[in-house]
Length: 124
Image (cartoon, rainbow, N blue to C red):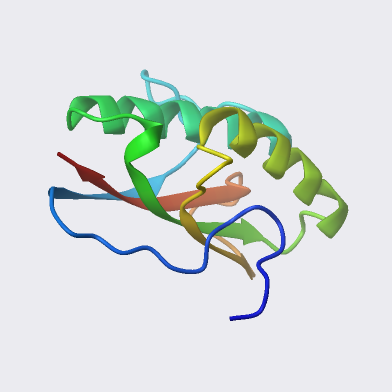
């Protein structure tokens, strides 16, 4: 396989454990309020916090992540991807990162959402 760029793995093999699927993580706090209107970094940070809460509720943590799918609105400039990587790398296992997909979309369900993430984890 060609080398991966941007700090992700291209392949994950699951041999055992409980599969946890986490959908639609957006930048809302525990009260349902949007965090970081017009602030990409703040939204990414809140989404990773929410993902951590979801993982803990399933009995796991960021070490259990095997896949993340990232959806970013196309009005966020490519230069802001470094902010995504900086936030992500504080949460994931950078020595063995999850497989990852990052796509630009024309919009998400709500116009103030700049970013959304789905994830998969395997918890023993």
